[in-house]
Length: 368
Image 1 (cartoon, rainbow, N blue to C red):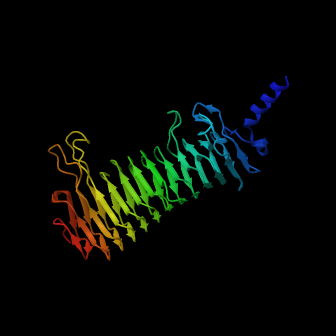
Image 2 (cartoon, one colour):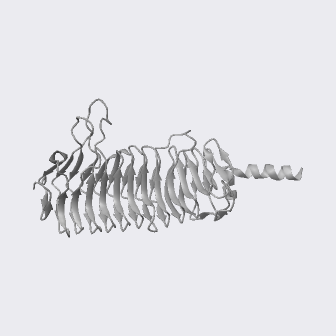
Image 3 (cartoon, rainbow, N blue to C red):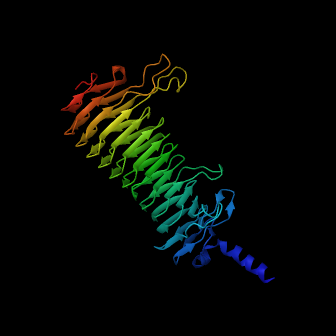
């Protein structure tokens, strides 16, 4: 009887009502609905429970609920030896259609996992494998429509991992440890990244498989490889961003058909300010339609080893379609160490150079 009472009490504690917000403990499920305030730090073991959406976190915010961490820290205990999930399911806060704000999550596999219209603001994710993520939960839910604003990720391998569509990511900062990715945008559509900063990761911003994402007025500084990387048929609008002192390149465009780079600045990067390679993809757009060109306009490259470099494709078209072109219009590349601009193509149908400003150039297709 005593054991049954204890189990019942534990189950009741897991479902917290607003009136009992002070009793929030490890494994709590908050909501649906209501406002909750954490009044103490929490250090929790992995939660070995799941629901229809997947594994629960050590705190869980459900539809319509708001959790105010009130400056407190939620921490995961170190991984335990043994088979999964004991050694992998160290999820910090899971928020689904709810809001979490004003605190810190540390030491977890994922600090904050969000989905289906969640709001995450003024949260610090420290020393997790991934600070913040939009995650697919058992293919049950809409991934997108989430808001991340004024958050800070420090010493995580990946700062923000974004799946799904129509996410709004504004005024966040991620400071890495030289590995991973600051903002990893994977198969995301119509997502806006505005005024974010990525510092000291492997790559600052990495957009792969995205469709019409808006990457606007972000800064990527002191990352080991790329400040901004766009690849694998990504078609994003990249406007007003700054890449400084990244080890390999400020901006790397690889097979990002239809992307636009407008009014960006690449300065003091280790090798390239902008490096562009666009392969043919045959009839990948169907109905005999050629892939759209990459547009590079009003950008500035200065004090890099190379300013703007266009590489020939590794894969040539196997159809009669026109090759994918890159248009470089009204850019400025000056004071770069070796060449301000370089076009390594021999087929001048692949690049259009018009009204650019530079001092040193290499390649038969370049026109000023």
